[in-house]
Image (cartoon, rainbow, N blue to C red):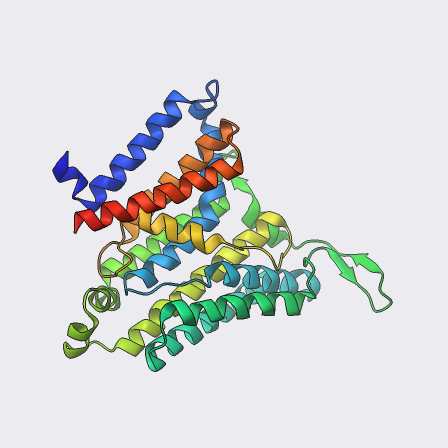
Length: 324
């Protein structure tokens, strides 16, 4: 058992098993054993999971990205604006939204890598800026099928089919499209971190930035790449969020960065960088997702859920420290 607790994967798997045991014991009259409970859990956690993938790529470098929630909100607003109000096609709307997400990530990464600004400060600034832009372009209102005309009245337009396509469930309602999006993003992030030279260089930077520099690793270039990918994934999450809500809410994603970082940390990826990966983040996503679902089906209040999540995050960090 002691050896298991010293292993990152072992601790995460043990935590997930304990959460599942809680679900079995407190099954809400068999609700926990129904497939739709697990299906809905995966759907509910999908947007957070995409943001967790973005956060993992940044955290392995020893950085942090506090802007992921705000970039989600901005992306949701822009995607809705492009497709609903401006009438752009799905390809153009998605491409433009993804591009803006990448640009926002590049700004953060460029400031951090080139000017040596602390990631906490740089991404805090981007968090505030992106939320401000979302409110500016939306006029502080949700971008929905109600379009305000010049005389102040509202006319209603049809929501494009792409919203239904992304927000729906397929295979006889057995899995949500946004869950498949999360799986695709997690797989892409895993390939990048574990199978590419750039991914290995990010681990080297997180492990020892000075040693990586003297080994020929370009710190600014790789930091720029990490935050650019994070911005891209945030845009994907924003599109998924808008599709599920059938609108772009400038307040969407508020505090989502905390849940994303919690998933990464609880999975076992070190906040100091250099240790961890997507395989651990997946475990963290499942731990948080099942914990939230179990508490929800047992009608536990949100305030209690938040307190428990805070305790679990602290415990995860303590276990990490003991494991080193």
